[in-house]
Length: 114
Image (cartoon, rainbow, N blue to C red; front, side, top):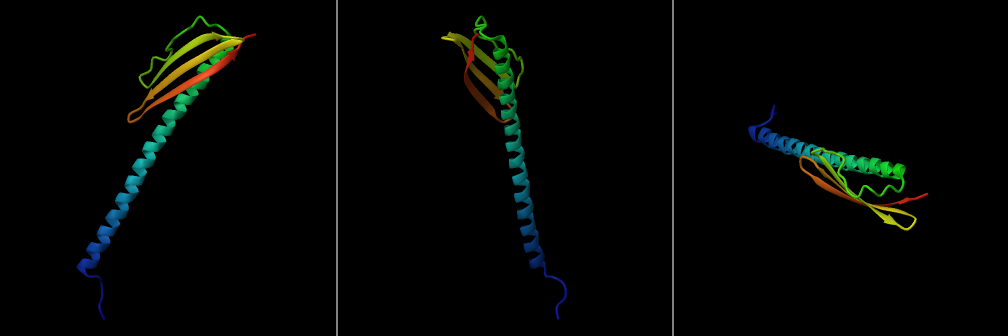
C-alpha cells in the first residue's frame, strides 16, 4: 500500500492550479475594463441628458451657436443650435476620454418653440 503523492503528481496539480488562477485573474481584469468603459459611457449619456434638458428649458434661444461648457479633461462638448421651422435643431458631439477608451456620442435633437 502506497501513502502520499509523488513529485510528478504535485507538479501537475501545481501547474493546473496556476492555470486556473491565471484564468481567473484575466477574467477579473477584463471585467474591470468593461465596467470602466460602461461607467464612462454612462457619464457621457448623463451629460448629454443634462445638456438637452438645459436647451429644452431655454426654448428657442438660438443665439448660442456653439459652445463647450464643460472644461474637463475627460469630457468635451460641442453643440450647435440651428433655427428650424417651428423649433430649433440641436446638434451635439460629446467626447469622453478615459484611461483606455475614447467615446464619441453624436446627438441630433429638436426643441419646439412656443
